[in-house]
Amino acid sequence: MSSFRKHPLTKALWKRWRKASNWTSAQAIFAVLAILRMLPPRVGLGTAARIGRWVGPILGRHRLAKKNLARAYPEKDEAWIEETARGNWEQMARLAAEYVYLDEIFDFDPEKPGEGLIEVEGIEIFEALRDRKGPFLFFTGHLGSFELLPICAATFGLEVTALFRPPNNKYIARRILSARRTRGGHLVPSKAGAAWALAGQLDRGGAVGMLVDQKFKKGPPTTFFGRTCRTNPLVPKLARQFGCEVYPVRCIRLPRGRYRLELQSRMDLPRGADGEIDIAASCQALNDVVEGWVREHPEQWMWFHRRWET
Image (cartoon, rainbow, N blue to C red; front, side, top):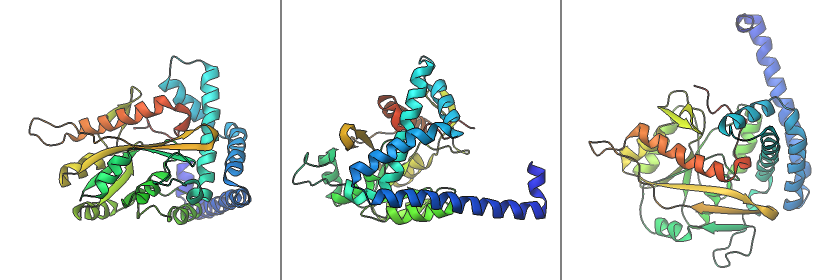
């Protein structure tokens, strides 16, 4: 098949088919989101979750999600694996629909905590970081509604530049990028030159946030759920270069359509005998934090991506 695609004619036809396929699937998704937009947020998100639970299991990625779950949780039975995978599709559908309602969902008022859909832990840390100069690094994983985290930081006057990996479908990528331009600070697409942009922000004493649980072919060998993978070393590299403070941050979904955002205490990255940050050991430490989060809420993590491919 690969040699077939290398032929000039078939290569051109393949590219046209891919473009048409991406456009068609993107339009279908946009149509669903447009319908959801006419509904109140709780109703729309609940509807998306039901659609996800129905559609997800018929997709090829459902098999991958179940395979990954079985490898991560060898002690669990088939019924638990299936139910968790189906619950995961509910969560992923909610995540897609949340782009429609980002600003409406985030109703946290620092003057009236506990009255809206959002609760925040670590407010005192947000305020302390706001009142002094960085550089600061925040890391999280594909857990819960992670898109709300930069909006939360901005609410406390802390602007965060987030590393953004666009979806492979360029039509969806454009729409998501537009949706993310809310109150959440600046975005840096994950491509050539991204590290320089983040470095410039840190050099000015700013704050940078990124996801650390994606597949990364050139990272140091690590483990995640006891299985070998490679991890992006950008967080420890930037921390070592700029002397950044590093903070874990996560968002999890709660019952009845609520959310909890947590800014956790400063994390001290492992250091080598020379006193410098140990890149490989730090990558493992980041994995361990994210794994702990996932074990608390396994249905809220993206099980259908190829995290363990090396």
